[in-house]
Length: 235
Image (cartoon, rainbow, N blue to C red):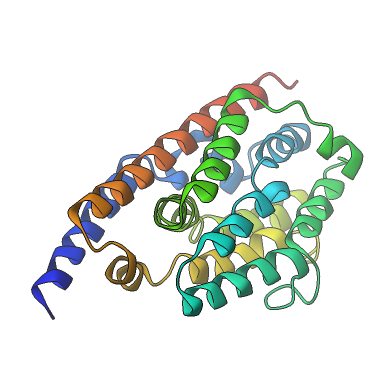
């Protein structure tokens, strides 16, 4: 291992420490979802507010593909865009946004209602931030989306899918959005060391990566807090 690779290992430790301060699975919103203690109406509210990410993924991965300066990494991004938009790799040809709409329908939320949701400030903030970073440049956008947002999905998504089937009577097909993302986001967020070695060649680059991850984690937690407030208001 080169001296620079050792530096990157330290960066990965810093990133892990950032995630450890606000892990998705430790927020009361996700604890309740994994435990199945929310009413169906409250889960429906969560799904409507969280739609800011899965229904607008094209605002994130699309610009990353366009902005990626490396042809091999563009190929990887092309596969992610293809999967999100077509479901051709993980979800038997069902686009991820349709998996989410299917999940919403299982809780009584029509596609029209889902898209018409008045999003809370936290949901608007994370959607706007990820869209901005993805369009700004590849380094920061990839760091925010992959090393920040997607990195916390595995380990939580699978448990939520199990809860949906056990406590709310959903079929495997209904819960497929969470089933798929347990694996898909594990794939999307892998290769962190390779990413750093290829694109973070200076200390300034590394600082930008760490900042993007920290801001994403903080904004994600803000979104969870805000969604929890909306959920608690449902009776």
